[in-house]
Image (cartoon, rainbow, N blue to C red):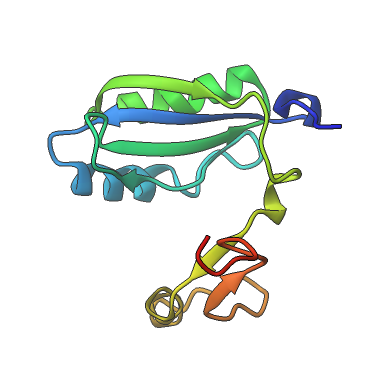
Length: 137
């Protein structure tokens, strides 16, 4: 049985926004908020995308109020406009940390160049079964 996101104790959302300079906004936003919030809220990352809302910011929060605080902090950076919130009702994979992923050799090298140690062995390539058991996705 699939649980709804809030039943697992966290509130998650995708924050869509528009910025005149999306690369600069994403960089600044993550530098300011990426390590803030403690357990109350996590700004997972800031992606620049090809769409009218050219920024997508996944946010994970302890409560609806913490989610709103994270959103307010994003908006108060005054680099974004036209903010829309897409609340996550449920997610697959469940729990979310078992989701598949891919780490390129360049991404792993960038981690090492920045001397970032996340406390576990990471290898380049598919993580889990990403992009699916069929190599063509």
